[in-house]
Image 1: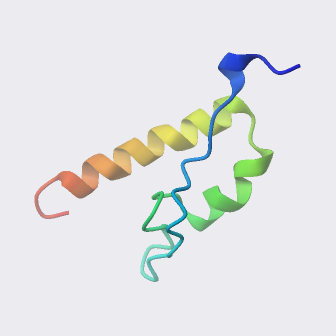
Image 2: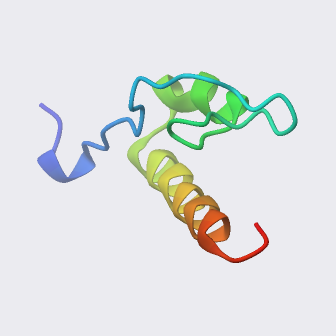
Length: 65
């Protein structure tokens, strides 16, 4: 049985549209490679992806981004 702390939910928000310039989903901000890899990642790998998403969100909020 998995440990509850190991569960990392998908960041998918069901708004799956890739930006053609960056290959980043406009809904969840994952790259196409991150989306494809998600199912095979361990919890640490998933948390690493989530950390990158936070960096992308912060970058979008900065002026000029």
